[in-house]
Image (cartoon, rainbow, N blue to C red; front, side):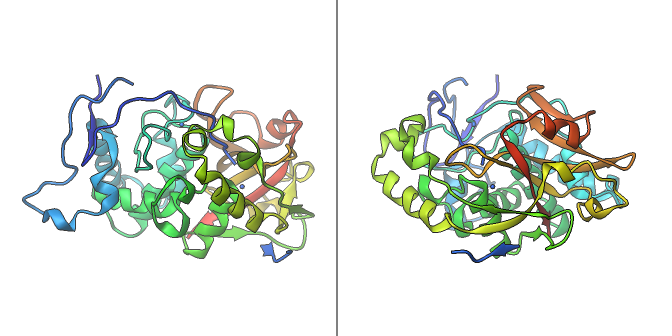
Length: 320
């Protein structure tokens, strides 16, 4: 049985709720009960007052913290010239798909879970490892710090409303922080423009555990939604994702984050994954709801998208 390590508070498992896996910008107007607590950092190495807040309340297993350090240390000698997003992403092949792993507890806190992933937490996990690798960082606290920056508005974890629930928020915020760059063009294959209209969370608060428990959060979420609605972004329509690597679609590189846009009312994005080129055709490395695990899909990305009737195309982001 895995032990959950939490600093400062003990959290009990609570049934999860539906978490919206949502995503050149033009201005246009997801256990058992907790068994123990343990500090995340050796107190002989760091003074208590220096421990960041996100570490004081972090929830993780010993297996997770050990794995993070192992992966980062192995990468120093194993990765070579391989794209770090692909290198780390493939380390999670076969890990079970589990939704709503971020919804434990009543107070927002950093949750680290590398043994159960959904599409969003998979990409966030791989991105945080990549940032550590690129910057020569190798401790568990380093990894957690990067995860906070990626997951929360302006890189600061506050309450539930500070989490970047929609991918539009995630992309814009991480681009402002210089973590990712939105890849786009006004030419092929970017031949369509998305006009954002997000309001799913504020219109369906009963689907979100935290919004049911804290109705005062709804107003803030709604304000953020309105702030993004009306924004426009160039994207690649799904008719164009079947192109060859040697053609215009080659602007998408191995390791890029691909966000699948949706026509579903009130949402912006329905799924995210990592781009992989194989035999000149685009494929996707992702935590798949269909396969119930992390996979490198043997089907081309074009074939995948044509079966998704509500998906309209993709936006593309590259870790800097």
